[in-house]
Length: 460
Image (cartoon, rainbow, N blue to C red; front, side, top):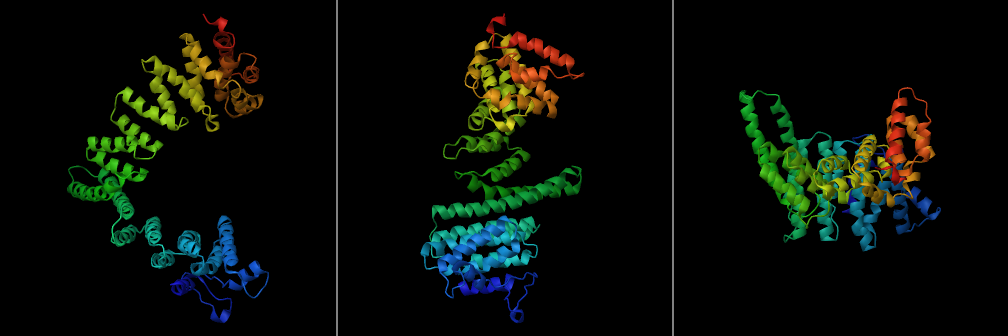
């Protein structure tokens, strides 16, 4: 098998250094023979090379070439690395096919002289290479088939990608096991995604037609048939514990399109709440977006986002969560609304989120007017030692004012409320001579004097 595979790679990508025996592939890729070069690098010119050292050196050269996007050099080293398939170390020999596939497929995907024919030939050879570990071979076959199909889809060859997966779907690996069943479900689900892709194209075509048009009815029937195939292929996989975001989204979109709101809700609820499934923020996002489209009650929306908040407190939906909590009649929700804003701004990536700062400035004023001084104190207690340097330093004041004066004013108000009028950030913004913002800064100064928590005695 090694000799066959090496011969195939030679046909595709390798030529001898000797011009008289040089072979140029149909793709025009010219890869010199590198055994002598690698031997010299590893052994310092000795006649006999150490097998393990050579393959290890080859792998390092390949990885370095990939990092530098030197696709030609990577392909040259790759040919020599094939000898690892004959390694005397059983573990290394069994691991080799997967490594060769991952590296080789990346090289062929990016190499400027590569084409679909080359990639197809490489993938077909890899599928037949086999390894001693039976189960490992099964997983490798599935991995290659899926990536091969995605490569074909990338080149617009939808039918070829579908045939590729259909072939993988018919493989038999002896007695059926639970792990093999999941693999087959995965292949079928990817077939479902390809069918979904066709369905979405027909959906777009349908939106451009008049409902009274004969073609409208014909396309509707075709779409329904396509959606049934997609559902069949995807359904088994999404019932298996795992993270199946693209499959779930596709399936739910079709259910909604055909009016099966109950089916879509059940699917998304199970995906988000079934304890057998791993924790997945996206599952709660999908459920929330669906319930929002359904115009679900505020309490229901809050309950979904509350879990998302526990998993990812900096998620972009947290500002929406805050709005829902702020409008709630429950004091517990209103208090949580303040925590949500503080926790969003605990993350460096949200430092310049002007919406978050506007919400916090407005809500601090609302809470302090409402005599809930203790809510603010509770949130500020754990941040008192690090937020001043994190958000309200002299450096940030200069930087924010230069980048966005509106952002700087919102932050200055918050800084004044939390740290008092002596805060560096607040003082810097206060001193800026800006004609348009002069009145706004003056109002901000009065508000800080009235609402700052540094001197609670001013609150009446």
